[in-house]
Length: 205
Ligand SMILES: [Fe+2]
Ligand SMILES: [Fe+2]
Image (cartoon, rainbow, N blue to C red; front, side, top):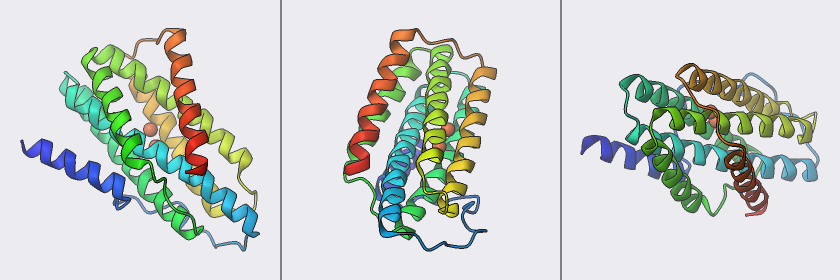
């Protein structure tokens, strides 16, 4: 029961955008550059997409941790979830600094991802980790794309995205180490499609 209350509290914090970071934001060490209004709006929209991605990550990890069987698996999921919480806080902060706002659809993104995470968890750890490894791989690719798309002079945003990308690579490696299976191609394609929908919508709303 206590665990459920704690998870629910975390869900509300994620959706409300009041996540607390354990590690300082990688942007902190860098000066703020003056950006053109257009670049700023573009960077804010890209960070809104990343923030939604991190909301989904919170929900997925929570869903998976609730249903994961092995204590070792649960432990790894909880550690990654804490790092995702840093990402969530860092990206929310960066959106604010850029004068943007988080997605209005966050409760929806959260609910959908939680259901998917819980379903993956129910399939057993091997598939749970398979799903996780593939998610992290796709997120890593997606963040690499953002590094190309972000204004080169926006060093603070880039630092956040870089740090997130390197954490996601670690998450993927740990999922593989825990015995992730390889997902069937059609599942990977479906995941790509779902994330395409999410990123396109979140860029705007
Ligand atoms: Fe993340
Ligand atoms: Fe991750």
